[in-house]
Image (cartoon, rainbow, N blue to C red; front, side):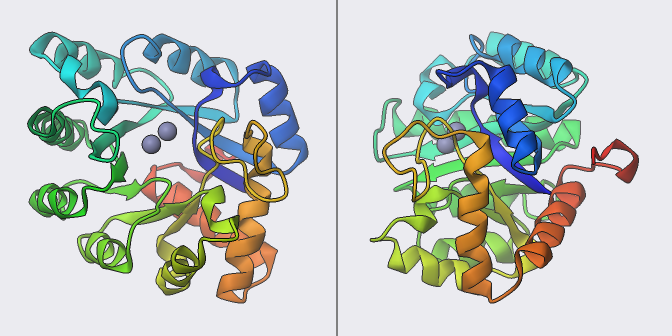
Amino acid sequence: MWTDVHTHLNMLDIPAELAVEEAQQAGVTQIITIGTEPDDWPLVMGFSKKFAQVKGALGLHPHSAKLYSDEIEKQLKKVLDEKNIIACGEIGLDYHYEYSEREKQKEAFYRQMVLAKEKKLPVEIHTRSAEEDTVAILKQFSGSVRGLLHCFSGTWNLARAALDLGFNISFSGIITFKKAEELREVCQKVPLDRLHLETDAPYLAPVPHRGKQNKPAWVVHTAQVVANLHKVSLEDLSQKTQSNYNDLFNISSTEIII
Ligand SMILES: [Zn+2]
Ligand SMILES: [Zn+2]
């Protein structure tokens, strides 16, 4: 059984029903679908209620940080209490695209970390080309907020700092790409009890599907590469990532679907 800890069911060309069904057939029995701004939060909540395999995470993406306001915060506070919403995210910093000003991104990230702390929810963090500022904010919440760095593509320095501060690392299909040698070296150093798998679908389809639209079922290709890097069987990796998921997202064993 596999978990896809970060996907965007509302952005797929295929119907969510089909994506969830195909995932189930491939052994991907738990999926977290992510909200990025108020417009998609209701869709995420809908999916998390409709499908037993799906939970939701809600937050304001760094691309949309310019929208952050007291009003949005109030809305977010409310929706984070909804059933089957198990994390705040995705939140963070993206200085690669810089669609929102850096100061505004930092403010939105910080304030949503405060919210996650209040709500006792883990976070899903998006960070790109912003290692120093990401670590500076994570430091302020070390020990009080848990979470993962999603679709990790940074340096070992960032991974090590995040791990030291108590945050986990999630790998996507990037790890299967030919040129991702450096990232594979990072992955080898991330302890198996701190590691997650995701698709970030519809983006970043893993080899051998690179270039197509990604879907949760394909997390198994990422799993195969990670298992090889860590020299463990698929079964061992499946068990580890499952238990990491349960632990981080406070999933009790009674809720697990077989
Ligand atoms: Zn992201
Ligand atoms: Zn995402």
